[in-house]
Amino acid sequence: MKSIERLHAVLNNETLDRTPNFDIMMGYAADHIRQPMASYFQDYRVLCAANLAVQADFQLDIVQAISDPYREAADAGLEVEFPEDGLPLNKKPLLAVPEDLGRLKFPAPAMGRRMADRLEAIRHFRHQVGGEVPIMGWVEGALAEAADLRGISTMMMDLVERPDWVLELLEICAETEIAFARAQVEAGADIIGLGDAIASQISPGMYRKFALPYELRIFAAVKEMGAIPRLHICGNTTRLLPDMAKSGAAIFDLDWMVDMRRASGILPGVVCGNLDPVAVFLQGTPEQVQAGIAANAAASAPRWISGGGCEIPRSTPQANLKAQAQALQRLAGLRP
Image (cartoon, rainbow, N blue to C red; front, side):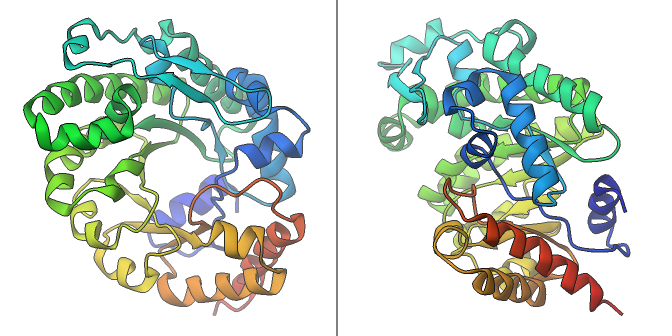
């Protein structure tokens, strides 16, 4: 089967030849083609070359225009520093005081330098593997975007001290992410991932007020465009699972601390994950990877996509990634 056929088969609960592999690779992908991180973040050609290389070498079933959380915020004026071979740095909050909200403006995605670079990545992927391998675009959740603009610690205080102001900011962020998601689907994205990592740090009640309504709106726009919505919230989301189930996502990423069997019984779509990126992929052995794959399959197959609980760390042994591919092939051979 082609990777795109494999994806649609698992989404529709149809027979497939093997479970898809959706590992998220960013820093690892850049290292794999010996390119510095700064180039990966800022030059779509490097990002595409890196993703295509790991997709081919480790039997991934996806290429991903995912990099860092600051694309939208940078185009709105956030000062971001790009160390040559490290993660981007948010130099200072764009919304230093609440009154700065009145000056907040996002450009149209095609007019923002960093958002447009992601659109170019998706177009390049479409030219290279369109119709063969799923292409994933990416947006920030409204709450995650608000935290990028305001600073995480300050935003956590804002949720308590000025909730009405936060809701006003979230409206702006949601509309920005909807426009960016639509532009990516128009460019050729099959999947739109939505990152809302900050949501794992708040209560279910706050999630229902400050995150879920905006995830719903963004995913509604994604589905209206004919693309597949994927929800990614790092961390322990166990307490959020019943509410995440209402987000409209078709694919739910689960981090390593979430019980896959329990999550599979709650979430209405396909679960993706959830091997520990550090303890299993980075520090573990091929045998541990294969045991983890078998445990994931027992807990959640057939509506399951294999992957790490979050991004595959840099310096992960190639043997462990190859062991994942081998384990998925072996499981396929055991299908009746």
